[in-house]
Length: 233
Image (cartoon, rainbow, N blue to C red):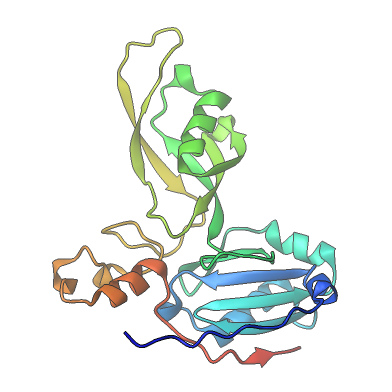
């Protein structure tokens, strides 16, 4: 195996540089082969009415950077989650140091839970269901919903069973429930991945000849490379 070149950077004070990212969001196209970056920049900023207020940078591999002028504008954008473009989802998060290779990978959804018996429709029930899917943010019992932050690289859970371990009229049986993700766009109907189309699913026998590297790219949403060009307003 060819030996890799290793490069070391001398220590320097980057505290001032880090402060410049205090109003920065990092985004990821979950299916970059289907999502065109230049169009994304143009259309998202128009939707947010921030065309002249945000500096954007293509980071390559389907990732991008938005630098905001004010904290209020950044927070207003995050309140609009989840995001999608070209019928596929986007992950968007505030920049943070020492980020993992998969960052950003979280998407926040309101998930409607269908099939919970009336006698068990309580906050703890929806918290338990949401907690099994990701990090619970809020519960809306009236509309049978739970708001959850999920790992977008994991396949969606669209149906499951729930075992109610107590309460009046509990008979020890499991209830089948369906999960409906609000504002969900683009996922594989075979494996429920957010990262590829059904025709490219590794579970499809037609794709059995794909290389392990290509299978990993499709699973992780790294199927495209961009030139890293910076665009400024």
